[in-house]
Length: 332
View 1 (cartoon, rainbow, N blue to C red):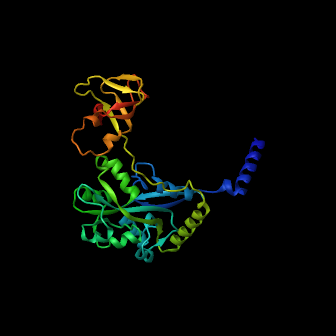
View 2: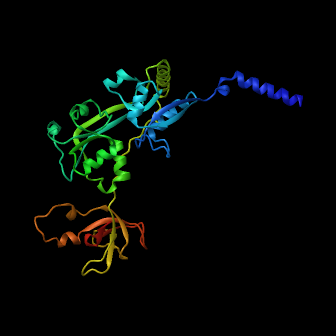
View 3: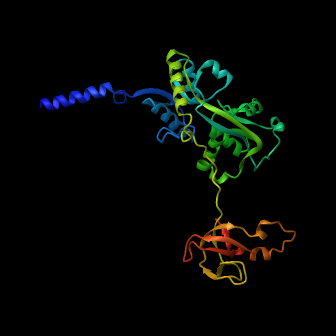
């Protein structure tokens, strides 16, 4: 028993003398709100920006206690020193006088979007002639902010996008990844309707804000040091979300006068032919030239007989790359 006690004394002494083992985990409370994909809702994983901040604070064993709030309310409470910090926020001249800002933590790209069902890709110099919306509390970069300074303010990103889809506004600035995430998850059928204006891109940084107090200044100083330590790590970033390119998935159908669907291995004089069951699913790899090009005639028999290249997705010939007549291809 004495030997065991002596061992534990040695171990305890070693831990106390070794700062790497004796370090205690600290906790900092930070207000945030759902802003996908950067900050996910409270019952989900953090999101890319939340995970980035967590990783930065992990360098000195600081855990984050996330407090979900409305972004405007969180800002107001930090401004009035009722809360210590909130994240993430765009830096504006007015805000810089009211709260403390960290160094940039990540950057985002913004565009001005339009619904091509109702509007066109216009010259931005004429933008003020149209109905413009913007989301409350947003900054889109200096160039876009100046163009939309008199825009109608809308409470949330989702409400703003619905206004654009319903033709209640003509143009809407928004952060690219936020727009893409909403289109993918909430409005996939309208994904191809919403387009960004050409030659108008804004870039802005996102920051942690803190109260103008001694404690707030200490937090900003600490975070800036942690950012400096990790600045060369390319894996630490809030990854942007891109719109997926929707593949041309089709099923094969019979056509009048052609009840059997044939696929051929090549377009030369001696291909191998394969019989394909009706309903076979395919991915179109390359549309034929005649179906891609316009025609001066409405006599389109040759267009329907032309061959497009597909890969077979199911059935007895799954995996084969074959050429199929256009009249047999029905897009899904």
